[in-house]
Image 1 (tube, rainbow, N blue to C red):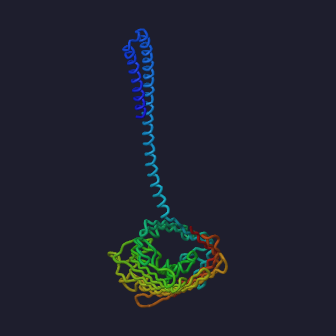
Image 2: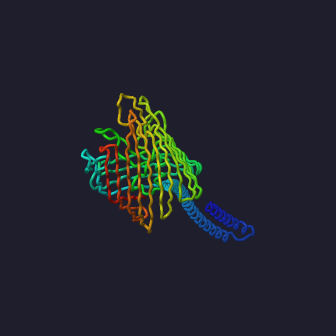
Image 3: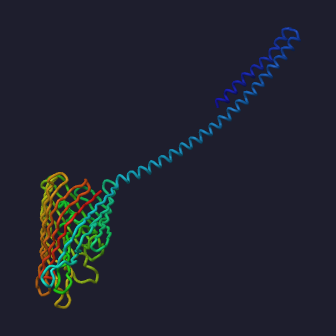
Amino acid sequence: MHTRLLAAAIAAGLGLTCLAAQADPAQTGSKGRSAAPASRSSSSQNAEIEALKAQLEALQAKVAELEARTDAQSEINVSTGQAVESIQKTQTASEKRLASIDKFVNNTKIGGTMFFDMTNVDHKEKGATGGYQKKDGHGWTNGTGFDVKRFYLSVDHQFNDIWSANLTTDFQYASGVSATELYVKKAYVQGKFDPLFAVRVGAADMPWIPYAEKWYGYRFLENTLIDRTVDGGRGATGSAAAGFGSFGTSSDWGLHALGATTGDNAFNYQLSVVNGRGYKNPSRSNSVDVEGRVGYQPVEQMVIAVGGYTGKRGNDVQGGAPTRNATRGDALVAWRDKSFGIGAEYFSANNWDDVLKYNGPRPGPAAVKDDADGYSVFADWTFMPQWAVFARYDSIDYKYKNLAGSKNKLENTYYNAGVAYDVIKNLRLALAWKHDELKGPNSAFRYKTNEIGFWGMLSY
């Protein structure tokens, strides 16, 4: 546009000059000047006009060239603007994707915990001769071996301030039976609407066992009282021993409500309505089981908690045998600070192994009803940075009776002791000794087990 205006101005100026030149001869002739000079002046003016025309043509060519360059530059500018706009759009989309990925990563936590050991097992059972003999059985295998008792891999994602989800797998390898197992231990969606009210739907921690593990502090070395398996023991002479195992499960499928406050005078609770078979068996039944817990902390370092369980443990199935409720009551008192921990746990259970009612012919099985109670006391002391000593003692009395009402009793005694060393923040090792002994109504149900070696826990 500027080029065209400049060209028009120059052309106008040249045109005026030409007109002035053409008017001069006429003015001179009118005053009576001689014709010869006028002719020479006209020739000179014509030459000047031609020169001016040539200059105008050259100028017009230059103007045309400038216009072409201007148009080309305009096209380049438009193309460049379009490219810049496209880059900006791509950059904005990339920034949004990166922000989305960054948000996902920041709101997702991946962790793992491994329980492992390398120990020597000495298991003996009382035979018909009355003496204890070295023999594999009741879940024990003699010898030395390395075991990965548990490997938990967890993924926890926070969608927003209320909703989150958790997936935790449970892997174990036992050298004694040369077998590996992989389970989904936890898989739930949580809505936390208030510190005192959160809801989990799916497979999640049960109210009692994980809570007791927290106060015990040495789960990598041994399960807590009601979670510890006592293999075998029930039955009649000459028959395979059945029952009794653990008296609870650490995770189950269902609906879980929980909440807690913090600090001194704190309160916590959890109520779970579950299938009853545990996280390894998400089966259906005609009824659900209920487990609950309430805890009170007069000071942050101390807890007083009670809990209970009732239900048919997933045995109330269509077309199945008649059932009765299995029940369990729990209590825990514990103290734990940075250097010292001490506590006691107690339970009482009824018909945990005999939910199914026997309606067959007599004399029937050796056990049709059962009841049990037990306690555990534990303590540990961190006597210097990274070093601690610990000990624990458990006692369980288990009674079962047949159709005639005859009652038999099993007694289980367990204890451990050792020293722990924190190699790094996330790696703890323990050198320990365990003793597990079962006494029964006859020699067929008696065994002693001693295990010594290293246990460890690695977490990240």
